[in-house]
Image (cartoon, rainbow, N blue to C red; front, side, top):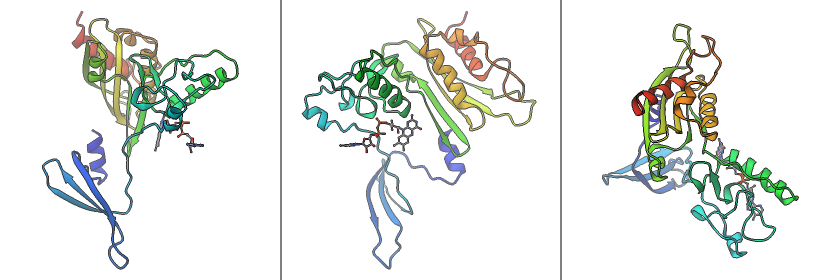
Length: 265
Ligand SMILES: Cc1cc2nc3c(=O)[nH]c(=O)nc-3n(C[C@H](O)[C@H](O)[C@H](O)COP(=O)(O)OP(=O)(O)OC[C@H]3O[C@@H](n4cnc5c(N)ncnc54)[C@H](O)[C@@H]3O)c2cc1C
């Protein structure tokens, strides 16, 4: 879905392709950046670009902390407890350099601005004599791609399986508001739940940027945060008026699709 949106805006997407070199023509030559890559099948690909963004993930720079004796945790980040305390007396760590407590899987590394703010507040309070605990992350994220938005919260199917759950993931579609009212948009949903307990484990949403994708993923995040079952999402009292929603909100239609397939009554 993301690929299609990029392509419809003239973006060429090459996956499974390794960039080997980026060079710039000498003065007098074409001054655009020359990106040389090799596809998975070994074919050489060259493209000229005005701008190259290097997006290779996040790695915590914890050399200083390590040299000072700090224990490291997931992906080399500084190991902290729920109070953001390191193993070193009077040293607290928060944000992208520190481990993150995840409400479904425990300690992990999940560098996000939302998490950094909450961890920073906990660390600050504890540094000044307080006793606060970081409540935990679910990795809730949303991103805009041209006219579309993609969002996730909780675990994807393979992550849930790796964490010992018995996940079932069901894909479904629903309109953001009543289709008879102009301007409605289709939302694609993936709901992951635990087949043993019925617990909601994760949701992914994709749809138009005006389809309240962020609001809807936040409903799912709230539900997962408080350990709700997928069935219980269907019972939530959510708002409705035809230009803005449906009597069953899209997120509830996704929950019902999951319950029909994964735990038929
Ligand atoms: C392009 C981009 C987009 C993002 N979009 C989102 C988003 O949409 N939503 C979201 O939740 N998160 C987003 N993030 C992640 C978010 O920005 C980070 O998780 C967050 O900023 C981490 O906060 P922090 O305080 O831990 O670290 P930082 O914000 O990196 O702050 C660390 C600071 O320490 C300083 N510093 C480093 N070394 C030293 C030193 N030796 N001495 C003194 N100062 C030092 C740095 O200069 C920096 O100012 C995005 C990140 C990037 C890069």
